[in-house]
Image 1 (tube, one colour):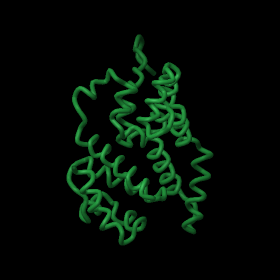
Image 2 (cartoon, one colour):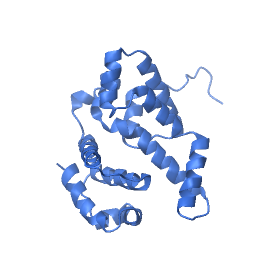
Image 3 (cartoon, rainbow, N blue to C red):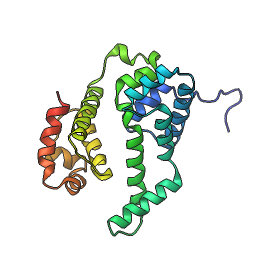
Length: 213
C-alpha cells in the first residue's frame, strides 16, 4: 500500500521513451505509452509538420508508426507470427518463438527512432540536439543510411536477418568493432551464421566500414 500523501509516479517523458526505443529497451508498457504519446503529438501537427515527421521517419506517418508499435504488443499478432515462425523451421511451438517474434516486431516498430533528427523533432526540448549526437546515435544513423542504400540496390532481408543486423549494429554502437570473438561474446555468432551463411564474414567487414566512420 502506498504511504499516505504519496504522489503517483511521474509518467516517463517522451524524450526518454524515444531514447529507450532507439536503444531497443522498450518493454510492452513503454511501447504502449510511446504509441499514445505519438498519437497526441500527431493530433497537434500541421499538415506541413506531418509531412516533415514522415520524411524523418523513413516515409511512415506518425499514425502508422504508432499503429506499428501497438501491433508489436498485440497478443493475437504475436501468437500468429510465432506459430508461423515455428512451422517454417519445423519446430514445436515454444516460448522461444514468442520471444523471438516479440523482439523482431518491437525492433521493426522502433526502427524510425534510430534517427536522432526525428527524436529531436518530436521532443525538441530534450536537450539532446544541443549535446550533439552520441557515438551510438552516429552508428545508428550510419546503419540507417547503409540499410537504405542496400535496399535501394535491391537487397531484401528476412525478419531473422534484420534482427541479427540490428544486434550487430548495437554491438558497434556500444563501442568497438565486429569480429568473430565479439559475436561469440554477444551470443550472436550462431544465429548470425544461420541467417547469412558464409556471406556473414563479408557483411561484418562492410558493417565495420559503414558504421565506424
